[in-house]
Amino acid sequence: MAQKPHERKRKQILSKEELQQLDKDDLVERIIKLEGHNKQLKDILSKSNTESVELEKKARRSFDFSKCHYRRVLLRIMYFGWDYQGLVTQDFTTQTIEHHLFHALIKACLIENRETSNYHRCGRTDKGVSSFGQVISISLRSKHPLGLQHEQNSIDSEMQYCKILNRLLPDNIRAVAWMPIPEDRTEYSARFDCKKRTYKYFFPRSSLDISAMRCACALLVGSKDFRHLCKMDVGNGVVEFVREILRAEILPVEEEGEELGSKDFRHLCKMDVGNGVVEFVREILRAEILPVEEEGDELGSKDFRHLCKMDVGNGVVEFVREILRAEILPVEEEGDELGSKDFRHLCKMHVGNGVVEFVREILRAEILPVEEEGEEPTTMYYLLIEGNAFLWHQIRCIMGVLLLVGQGKEQPDVINQLLDVDKYPRKPQYNMALDVPLNLYHCTYELEQEKQWVYGKDELQHLIKHLQNEWTIQNIKTTMIKDSLQVLEAEYRKMCQNDANEKCDERIVAYADCLLQGVKPRVYTPLMKRQTCSSLEERIEHYKKKRKEVDISETG
Image (cartoon, rainbow, N blue to C red):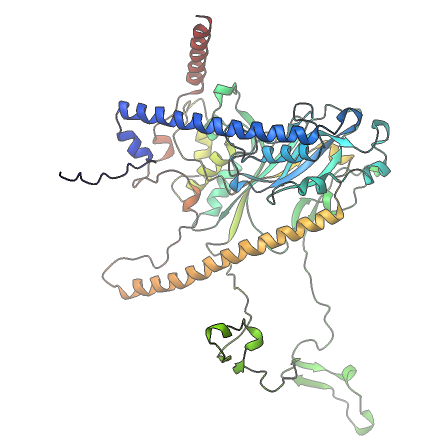
């Protein structure tokens, strides 16, 4: 019998272009299969969630919440969202911030369940997005009865909410601080009472035109209709797209001296609200750590009359001398220098494999700084944007357009065109910026003028150490990649210099290319000449018809 030819395994994940080539029947078949897979996954997750809920219920049966005191608090949560599917709990995954947060809250018996906790979140962050300043409002179990909760002694001796939660949360989700909500404001909400939200979007300079991006940013400030700079969520009833941007700037990520300039220093002072001080923005003109220089601290010609025994009796009246070299050096033992040494105590001896000779010659051993160069393509910047509230994917859409401006593909004035919804009623099709660099940095509340965030000193110390360790590992990885890049770029430059017959850019600069999602076309089409999406009015009409069809099917 003739053997059948080997059948290639069908590719499971198709690109957008490949999907567009399929006919209707193939697409329907794929959708049916995907819906079947989704149902299977939903059933598995539902079963898993049910089992975990039952286990939690069994663990809490002995705890009588009816005998507990509760207090309303604001709780500041920090998380790195790179490995999560967003903040909000979802039906088909447990990899959300809220899932882990409520798991910890319930397991610690700080709340009985989500439904009775009066929970509100400040900002809804999407898949991949991080936050240093996320704030939630919630009712937590307290040691103290309601009438005594706002006495300073009760606050100082309250349950260590952050410490309790951090023992149960994953390492990349941390409770940072909490703030008591006054008894007469029980409905105070992290979402509705937030006065300002601040986001940062980090990116490398690469070959971007920072000046052009800054010009474009200036056009965002004020109350504008941002329907073309967000993802319109008409299906969920969002039909109003005017939002006020209070501040939009492109700033460098400062290593030292980051406190220079006008900043809000409420967290770096003792707030004197009792004496009417409610404004904490101050301008720092200069901030440096300098050594206390002694006379003659540097090499060169100096007057050493105070660093000698003056011998005026013998006619010595001139004390300027030139020091050519001054160093503190170790007293070297024999064999202290580089060369052939016996390293048996500075290795793991592998005698079992016959290694009995441990003399090796070290030709060079130095500790050197990793040199940073000024305005290199790897210099980091960030978009700082502040507003009262933001639309779905608004900042990532704004950043997507700013990157096109920085690449020179669009002029800064394209922002004005996208904001002119009368002249351009339909949004042009374009790609958002990547999710990973976005960070909900800070949420501002009027309550902060009368109350202070409560930090646990030991817990804060633990968190700082943890983040320093994380920084070390991530920065080592970054430095290793950069070191490899420098070697490869040097080889590439040599090839370009030696190849006189072929035109070749001696330097490749593509650091920011990955920040714009989607397929990159060979020929660029300007934004305002692209295909457009449906207008707001068309979307509203579409959803009206859709709801009408649903109502008819349900009544029929």
